[in-house]
Image (spheres, rainbow, N blue to C red):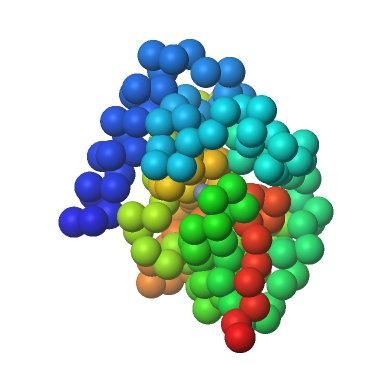
Length: 163
Ligand SMILES: [Zn+2]
């Protein structure tokens, strides 16, 4: 139920985003229509150029470029934009693709989804439900039982080791 509500909510936000004609690289997500909202200049100052390109402009980091790809300690992965805890180490796995991958988020409502037709592909974009920051994409080739692969840019996350 929560998953469906969260999905419908993000779909509505994505529809609203198309009206703004934002200069996003892929999915049309109204990235300023979330509980945590900042101006582009404020985001740029807060995130720095590399994280800004990913979280606010939906760019993708090169595969195998993130130190978090090989991170195996117990802990929590937070949104680098607003610090919301998004993924847990127990749901992380090596997908072999070069990006951090998770079988599920900590809670379904913390992630929003949008249709992404950029680069000639139809994909499901995922973003932080609190700040709208682009995280990565959701694929259906994950391990059982859920069969989902949350393919996430390491630069969109900050890892907090368990105490
Ligand atoms: Zn966030």
